[in-house]
Image (tube, rainbow, N blue to C red):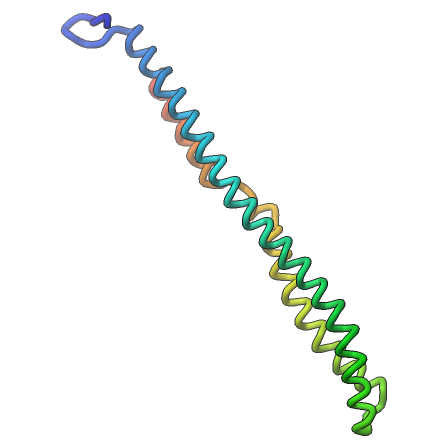
Length: 132
């Protein structure tokens, strides 16, 4: 190891150390990005599953409940139109809630790896400061 005057490390040693630390930092950032991306992908999958389940539930509920309840309500004396509106309204509310929950999880802003981007920005400033 080359030493400068007064026992301090030389420019070559400092530069080599800075580049080695920068390489380690970049590798750590890639590991962080990979972990954060996996987390975001899991949230995306959960949102997509909720969206699909909500859509399936909405379709199934509208079909089956309308048929059953229309028959019951008609037998109880209600008109077919009123029976259909009551059943369709309830199924629509349930389906809409599930659909909106899934849609919120698919928001592009939720998929942005914010911690990684912030960390990369800090690391960039630190490397620039150490090399200047």
